[in-house]
Length: 188
Image 1: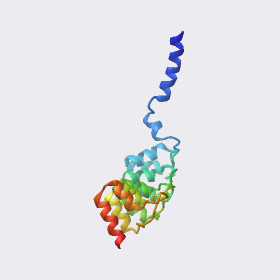
Image 2: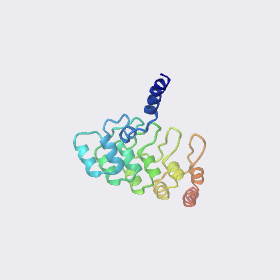
Image 3: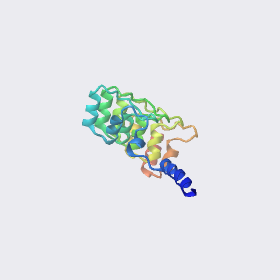
Image 4: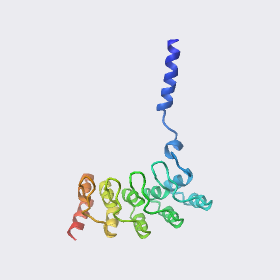
């Protein structure tokens, strides 16, 4: 009897701690997991086919991550352009306030950054913690992203809610090129 009572709770425990499957861990609450997945992996043809079915480009998972955010994060420029052509909201924030531009800044793809800015992305739109795209790029040590954001006119001296600016985030990344770029930008 004692063993049997032990096995039932153990089985329940194993169900609770068992790793989630790829699909359930990736697509919690997503209206169209296919489009989010296609954007994440950069499958242009599949994304194009999905969008032809009258799917909306701004479906989101429970954290508010959209296909545009995922494509921007992973540097899938062709998918980014496709989503924008289908009306994806360029300044839509996720649950933490991160926009596609912030995801692109962390991912480091300058061409994606330029495309988002040309499509109306607000260069200094910050997260709920006050982190701007430039701060995110500096924190991630993304040289190309920092160059493109500075060229687009990102404010260097803006601070987040803890009082840190892009230079302090760059110093934390220990990337000397990013630190140099931001210092050079401060002098201009």
